[in-house]
Image (cartoon, rainbow, N blue to C red; front, top):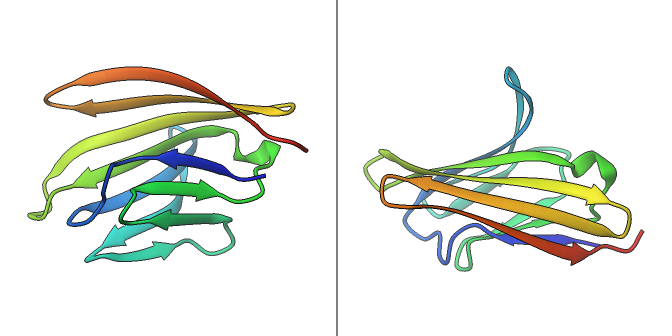
Length: 117
């Protein structure tokens, strides 16, 4: 099964960098978006849709568990927000905790999606 996570309502006009963190000093790039072009890192199972701002992880596995951070930059290259989510794959479900940080607002939300292995 696949996992979808809406990062933005619409990513047009933004520069994004998405990373999976393994620890404080080790991270892997998942995808980047610059000038309306998505670059997906080699050997990963992800897709990013610009007009819906949605990240899709294809064929979710136990190894996909972890902290993901999306750095969002405005048109001038100024970092304006971090979108963080913790994906936990447990049995037939994934649990997703999202945190959005910006100068204007903060929120936490938790979702669960059925995943059949």
